[in-house]
Structures are given as C-alpha cells and as structure tokens.
Image (cartoon, rainbow, N blue to C red):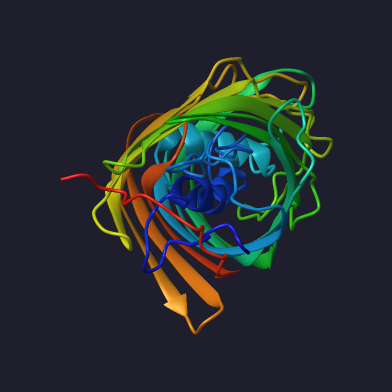
Amino acid sequence: MRCLGWVWGRGFSQLRLCVGAVVALLSLPTQMARADEGGVSFWIPGFFGSLAAAPAQAPGWQMTSISYHTSVSAGADVARAREFEIGRLNGVLAANVSANVNASVNVEFLAATYVFATPVLGGQASTTLLAGYGANSTSLAGTITGTLTGPNGGTFPFGPRSDAINSTIVGFTDLIPQFAIKWNAGVNNYMAYVTADLPAGAYDSMRLANMGIGHWAIDAGGGYTYFDQQKGHEFSAVLGFTYNFVNPATQYQNGVDMHLDWAASQFLTKQWQVGLVGYLYQQLGCDSGSGDRVGCFRSRVVGVGPQVGYIFPIGDKLQGYLNLKAYGEFANENRPAGWNLWLTFNLSPAATPPTSSRPMFTK
C-alpha cells in the first residue's frame, strides 16, 4: 500500500494524503456482539479515525490489516431481547428478565482498496472490500419469569426459570464493500461514502454468538478533515446513517441508525502522532417486523479514548505505519457497553520524495 508516502527523513508535505488513506480503511463497518436486534447492529463505532476524509497519495492497490478486540456487557434489556431472538422465549407473551450478557470478540481484518487515477466528480474515488476472521464468545446468565399462552388461548404464569447459556463461534465475518470519493482544498478535506453489509459470515439465529448479522444493510454518509500541515493540527468528523433490511431468519428489522465518529490529533514529529478519538451511536428509528417482541428498542452508546500512531521505514523501499487506539464506552441504552481496542498495521512501498518540501512545523 503506497498511501503512507514520503514521510520518512525529509518532511511532512505529503502526510495529509498518506495517513488519511490508511485511517480511512477503518471507516468500514462490521458486526459483533452489539445492539439493535438482540444487541447487534451493522455499524461498529470507531472505524472512522484521524484524517478519515483526506485523499490517498497515489492511485493503485492498497492493503491494510486491523486487529480488533472488544469486551462488552449488558443488563436485562439486552438479555431479554437476546432470549427472544434465539427462541428461548417462544410462546411467551411477556417476560421479566433479571440477567446479564457478556461478550468478548477478537477479529483480524484484511482490507483491499483500489484508488482510481481518473478523478470522479472532481475528487479521488476508491473502492474497498473488507473481510475478517475471528472468534466471538458470548454468555447469558440470569432468571426469567413471565406469562405463557395456553393451548386454548388462555394465559398462565411460568417461572422463575434460570438460564445459563455459553456460546462460542469461530469463523468469517460478513463481506463489506465500500465506495468513497474524497476532495482536498488546502487544509480542508471532504468525503462522501456508501457501504453495505453482504450477509456471508457465520450466523445462526438460534445461536447466542455470531460473526455475521444475518441481513443486508446499506450505510452512507459524509466527513470532514481539517489538517494544518505546518503546525500538525488535525481534526476529523464523519456522520453516517444505516438502513437495515429485514432479517429473513427472524423477520426482525432494525430501525435506522446514526453514527458520528470523531478524532483529534497532533503530529509531534515526523514519526509520532498522538490524540483522542470518540463516537456517538444513536438509533433513530424503532425496530419493527413480525419477529419484533421487544418493541421500539432504540439503542445508544458513547465512546472516547486515546490514540497513538508511528511511521517507520522498512529497508530501502518499504514503509510501515502502526496506529493504536482504544475506546471506553458509557451512556449506553439497549446496547452492551465496555471497551474496544484497535491495532492497525500498514505496509507500503515508500513513495518517491518530492523535489522540494516545507517542514511540517514552524517555530
């Protein structure tokens, strides 16, 4: 991947175009033990990061790997929804659940991107396909009481019933294609994107842990990056919306989701970048469908944390980039919350340096 460009040894005149292409690959969503139907949504906040709207340096193929870990937990609201989703409460008219859900997910992602040389609408167009392989371990434990439908249509109480479910799956995630266009105007950078979920991953509606979401989804939005090359100041924000199609296995349809990812960073030297990252995820529309047994079930979560980046040469012709960021979550509703960690590694051919360049920082 050539997007890191010439940043070793002589200056940062191309950094805006290089790192942006790497971090932009984090804009691709995937699926874990999260929210909407039973606590699972298409979009995972945190994929957009610093310089997300900055164009890549050069056209051609790019490759990036991402190691992702999340550890989350939820209370009775999500536990009740998951019990309905996996068929543990069939025939139940109403249920009171005193339970907790805990999940730990580890996934390795690979993203292949092609950046087009010919401008599209005056900007730089790219197409990406992301896929992952990993493990999801989810458990649910607690007690349930409720009301059942009798054989003659009457109702009668049941419970309390104790439930202890442990589920682990190792497999592939769904496939995530994306198309994006980015524009640069000095310190201002703009982006428009559209992406989708192709439900090809490991999914079973009767299983607590999954690597896919079991339904199609489409997501679109736009972003902005401010980057002052002379002072090394950077700020990025990306707003997107997800439309979810009906899950054919459960006849459940998630409502429309909104997600806002942001990042702020400072380049201390030619190699080191430090800053903060954050996100707001809010479901706007109510869940629906004949399989919806939990009502509107709008979900929300907020996350914030630190990030650090490092650029380094590998031999004479290659260049590496590492980015580590972490989020702590809070203010969640109808959605698990916890923490997640991202480690991104990019290996690229070192681009030819320009004939002249200005230093990135002014005294």
